[in-house]
Image (cartoon, rainbow, N blue to C red; front, side, top):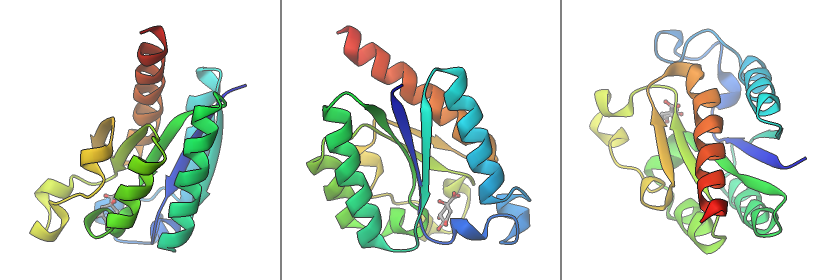
Length: 154
Ligand code: DQA
């Protein structure tokens, strides 16, 4: 069964207790359960990972690129948290590994502080899902599935 990787970056382990008015009451475990369900409905296995460490995220994105090239993975949904706004290393990893990525943000970052308006991920993302709350995760998995299917039909 092909896989889809769901990567959550720094502080997303605090979902359910962190800034509830912005991120809502769902925990990371709830989000991962939603991802498994959405992936299974498409015949995919969801691999869910979270790290607060930039280098660990780089390693996972590089590995995922190799898995995608081998035809075992359709790509990754990436909520890079605050590294979205700072990390050239994540940008380079996605580009260098030729990984199909859907960038995701739970909140509408464009309606928040100006330092959240710039993303190093967007220029190397195949698509972007922003501001749908945690419902964005299943939407991103569905979008990634469609993009991968369209590209393999070409
Ligand atoms: C976030 C938005 C980022 O600006 C923030 O640093 C996060 C979460 C979101 O999901 O809305 O940690 O990526």
